Amino acid sequence: FVPRDQAPTFNPSSFVCVDAIVRALAAGAALSLACFIYLPTTALGPGSVPALALFATLVAVGMLLLVLVMRALLHQAAALQSEMDAVI
Image (cartoon, rainbow, N blue to C red; front, side):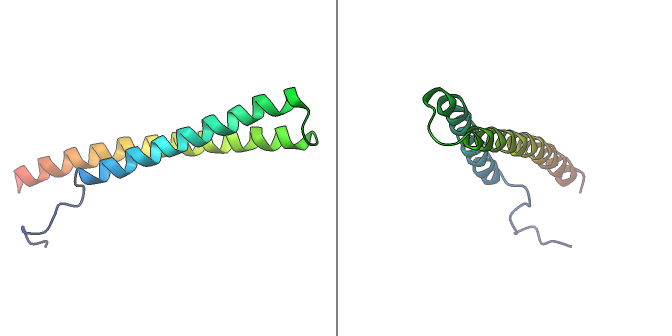
């Protein structure tokens, strides 16, 4: 049993951190997409560099989608915790 004076497990300050992570992942995905578009037009480096930028873009977008799903689950867990507090 958890004493009532402890902070809740899913507090609103965690949403700020998750939103910052989402913004950072979106910026990284946008930057790697910009590199993927820019590098082939300038012919800088070997052909594997744009392929690496495309791979980095796909990984960043995949991580962004995963964090967005986890963010939605965090919102649901916070809502359920407040309902459970009302019941208990």
